[in-house]
Length: 169
Image (tube, rainbow, N blue to C red; front, top):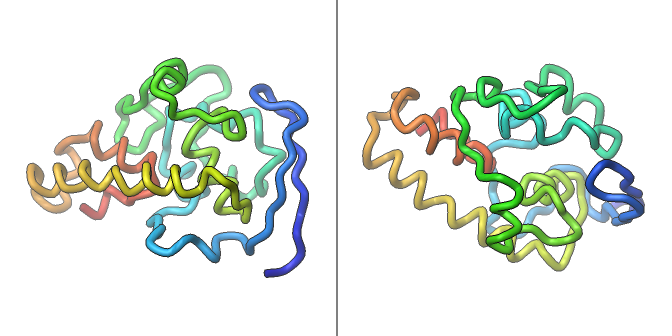
């Protein structure tokens, strides 16, 4: 397992939150949880309009942000891999009960921390949410020719937000 590492978070959305990284980076995932993309790959491809990780870089390796498509000011859908907005607002995420206190930015924050080795009581719920995205992959396969990246761009972008490589569908 390696050495446990305590992480203290102080950013715009979370202050004084601490957690432990207990697993090796990018390893020992739950059975059946097989994301196709690692967080740095997602940031380089363009997700969440480039605004998602701009104030919490200290929590993650600097190399994650080399070549990442980020926006210093506001969310810009043109920075997304498919150039479209495929996100609901944070207010909508909260309304639907998708946001928990430990990860106020949602699933991608959870995934970044999980990838870095944190394990938590919320893992099973988040992994169930990740699995549920398979219905969107099925819709892309049903309605698009393989490799036609212009087909269902918004849905492809949404799938990309969940660590599925929708460029390969």
